[in-house]
Length: 175
Ligand SMILES: C[S@@+](CC[C@H](N)C(=O)[O-])C[C@H]1O[C@@H](n2cnc3c(N)ncnc32)[C@H](O)[C@@H]1O
Image (cartoon, rainbow, N blue to C red; front, side):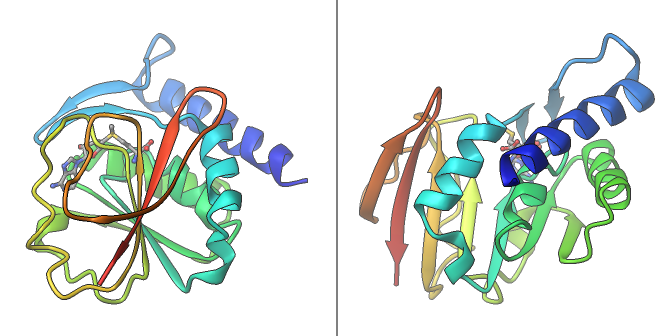
């Protein structure tokens, strides 16, 4: 049932991108803080099942792009996204409306300026090897899921790693 939902989320994202950015628009964009590219949605769904996301109170995607990962997380728990790019943030608000998601919030801004203490599960799909997140999570307790292979934090306690059809996901326990 949820895999049907995940397919629908992806289709709506694609439709919104075409409607608002042109038929030929691709899910890639240079933003103030790097590149927007999307996670592989069906792998994200499987990774959230693997991590038992339903056990957590509040999920946040740091750098949430068009909001598709947050929409998938909302199948499990309360979910939020923080994105620096105004167009992508706006697309994520359209996604929230189109899917009538009532357990989702999207914030515009730099995640380094946010107090993350209300969240207990952080997701990131970084486009580079170095991400300045240490100060944002100082004193924070919870679980961080990193998608992809670019960012491999040292000094964090890795509690699991799993590859699905395309993407690898690493899970860290903090605090
Ligand atoms: C590779 S994309 C991932 C998008 C989404 N999380 C996904 O998995 O589909 C990384 C996103 O992070 C955003 N980003 C990078 N640094 C950021 C920051 N400090 N604050 C907010 N957004 C940031 C970028 O603008 C980009 O949209």
